[in-house]
Image (cartoon, rainbow, N blue to C red; front, side):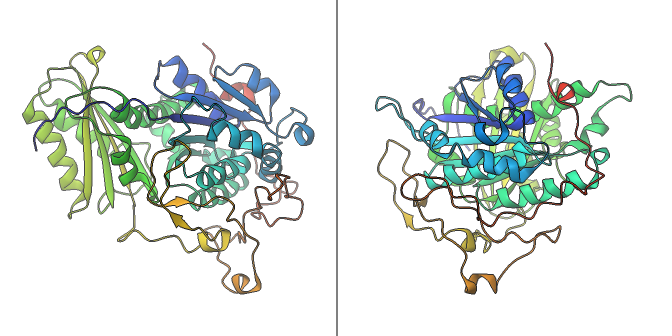
Length: 426
């Protein structure tokens, strides 16, 4: 495996969209960390949270419905709030400036289990899908102490996101406990989760945007991440004599990952970040260790980016996609939600996606569909997404079938973490 110099592709348009309180906090922390080369958007029903956001663009969701006061831990309210802003979201993602490139890739980040993030994130993802945008969601699951009700709602939201995103990465907050001291502040624990998100976005965007000995372009990333389903993301940092192997091992067994392995992953995206002193032997050590762990002959696309600020450290970012899939097949659940026409996209300034989802294909469920209703892991039937809009642009969510989230009023175990705890202070 040799080194190659490739002209950098710097016109790829990548956006990071934080939805709800947790998503907005993650965006602020990414901005504070100096992440560049992407545009930041936040969307929230809570007007106060929007006021402290540092994002380039802000969307107040459901101004009429929520009146700027949040979704009250009710995902259905969060969904309906997002449906009020469909055209605004679509315009922002699709590009309303003829001199500005439309969006190629969107990272959606949100906390699952609350109201706005859980309910609105799938609406945003579906809009991205209709526009043919490569869509990656990185979301968190609640702590166990937040209650079974919140966890059930999170699982429903995650399952719904799975049907409308290309790649879904889940960060279980409970794993933060293993990384924290007993007296560690809550804010610091949430920052650890945001750090994982930061490195996942940075690791992928740097492969496209930052010069290195081995550069990738957007098509390489798309090959691994498009329609890939569940994914794992691991980060490893090490220094010293055995830094290459130690960093690779840390990435493979990252403590914030779910209890699944990258073995058998359908595809792997690998970013090796270091200063210019990395050796060929170290490159080989990293790529061989990752390949050995994945096994088989599945595709591994890797690149190397230069970051002189790292000193003696080496950072490995691994995104393994198609977890648990022997073959790339469309999730049958999606068939009830849409009948998508595969087409070659050559228009609108976006990258040429070989399997772009045709816009306007969301339809209502028929009687035949209802005979094939499916249940998710928490025995909640999701019949269909609400229509995002009809041909005249008006929202139609009043009578739409939506996920049957656990009853908000009767759920006594739902514990909302106060907003001030989820906001990091600088």
